[in-house]
Image 1 (cartoon, rainbow, N blue to C red):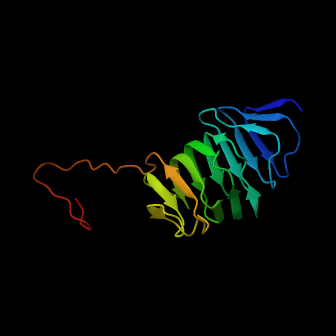
Image 2: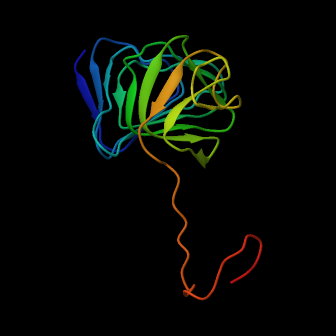
Image 3: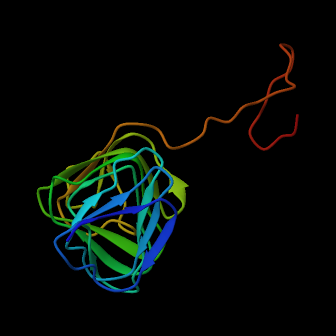
Length: 171
């Protein structure tokens, strides 16, 4: 019971139990390797990151995140539509986002297996999402609504009006 604030790096390798509140501040990085988080988790401060890192199944806490990373290996279960990610939602190679059937979660940006993705709807082949991924997203009907663009636009410099750029050719 009580409130604990994380202003640095906190690594927990076991289930977080109790009836208190854990606040991940703007500078906070929570690396969680247990199976579930029982206390209230406040992770809304811009810039903080929560990472689920177990080598196996984990339950993602229903809350609002600034940045959320699913890492380690195995399925990371999202079973509540109350989960939203204001910043980047990243699913690292080896981990699997298991978004419950019929759920829609919101993310500011999306990175799957280290690749930044375009905005729109994302899911597995069983979903009605516009974009699919069967490597990092489990075969359910859940959808990730991605508001923004995580990819960077390439910038071409040093080309004048009389030059052209062709694929596979140098400038």
